[in-house]
Image 1 (cartoon, helix red, strand yellow):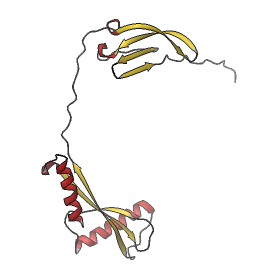
Image 2 (cartoon, one colour; image 1 turned 135 degrees about the vertical axis):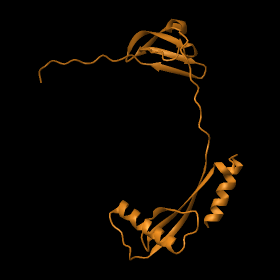
Image 3 (spheres, helix red, strand yellow; image 1 turned 90 degrees about the vertical axis):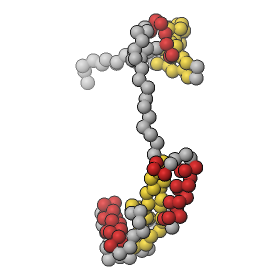
Image 4 (cartoon, helix red, strand yellow; image 1 turned 135 degrees about the horizontal axis):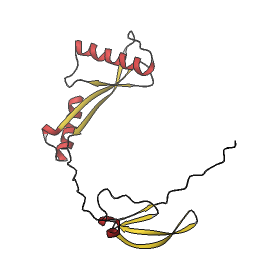
Length: 167
């Protein structure tokens, strides 16, 4: 069963362009004490378990059951309900581009000033072209950042409410 599922996962990943050295297959069994209504997933080695391997698998199931539910029953028979195979295609690390400051100012990126309403109050609101903002630019609201596919509104900071010292 494992081999058939592993071959299917490998074929699908190869179809997605992953080479053999970039494919990882993990196997697991859903196990339960005979008659139970819930299962515990236990990782399984690549080679089919037999002899000592079956004893190790059983011990792993009992330990996981103990960890999850606070008890185990090593004298009870165990059922295997499902075979699980997970195929993973490993992708290379992505190198994110690094940008340097250009020295552009907020004035260089400013497009216009518009009237905007925040919490029922009209205010002058600068509008900036996002692509002209320098790396690390800090903008206090209210402000609008525009680009071809997105508009971001930066709301004004709310003043802190001060109360009297009386309770």
